[in-house]
Length: 259
Length: 259
Image (cartoon, rainbow over all chains, first blue to last red; front, side, top):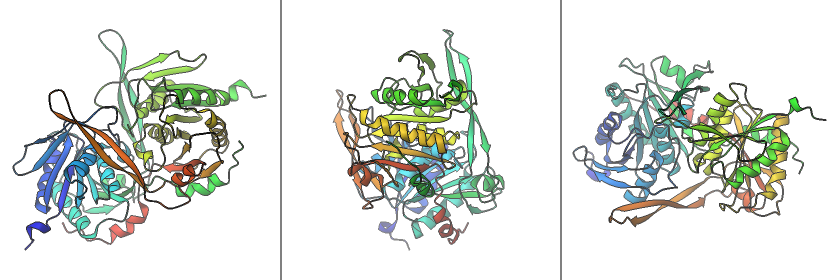
């Protein structure tokens, strides 16, 4: 029998905001595994990347959304939420696990860098907390997360059991639908967004622009997250926040810098 | 004699905003090297990381700040600026170089991930443009950038000459003062911010929080950017945006995921 005091402490965050269905599903799984604390943005913060709030102060309030769950909403970014959780709630006693999501929309490939969901998990990892970001290939508010839950549970349990290699975290993405073929450990596909700006005129005849784009996969590899998702697998990519391109150091050392 | 049409096209961006002294200094160097187009935020965007603007539209207007320089201000993030420049100004014909900064404040070590300056350069690299972010160890609006200029010029010239290894960019940081010892190619130091939140009460007795923190270097290596800067060198770190922790893939493949 698991003793109450041995249950892990789990921080749950997201970027779609504290009322999003995705985080509700993640909270439900986390409650099966441990003691849950939720700190999430008070509104949508998609595409915020690793932004932090330094030009204005933050608001931070406890809320009572789901029975028995300690929850806080924050006026800042997903990364702010993690920083506030570590500093103001856990007060230096790190949680045993940080889970972020479940995001409404994929965060595979290059999306890892734009995603508030993934940046929250990256911040958890920077803080030394085993961290996982979860995302589903469905932007809808009516998205069905039920097929993700057993995978979220088993992946979280493995991370709680083994820990993660130093300075790494996991980026987990789910295909839509319930015919999942299993889990595939992947690398980030070499892909990008080809931007398009939708130009419109405001009522005063001044132009404004909506950022849109088309996802372009330039990677034929069968070991990528894009490939795995297209073939019905749950993709798991280990992510690091040391951005050093170590292979480029000898190249740069061969250059002549005349000053 | 350099023919006019052979001069490289250079995109200049930043995160401190289009009126910051740092970008003025960067523009001056870029004008010595090529044809300059500036696209910068209309106000401060420090700490915006790789945020993009998807929940609201963008404004984008030509301005006339410095004689003979094509300049645009943008209501969005540093990354938005690069996307707008590539799509609306260069219209698919990529610039030959993207330079970001000069940032008022260091972006060494883990700061690369929070920095709007560096994220703009990362976005340039994602777009396939040779890209460099420059930052100075001085937050002041009166910061003296004069000792940086010859280094900015030589590093930019080397990048224009050689290109950069695929999917990499450069993170260049300058110490304060004019006794620079030269350039050192480095890796990103293993360091982090220990957050502290400054809690205050508003006039209605409600709490609010300012994010502050202390930089903690946990890396004794003499091949890091932190070491180089502390010892009077200009640090140059090659940066990549493939965040895959390749070394962790075999570890994860050894786990059992029971679903």
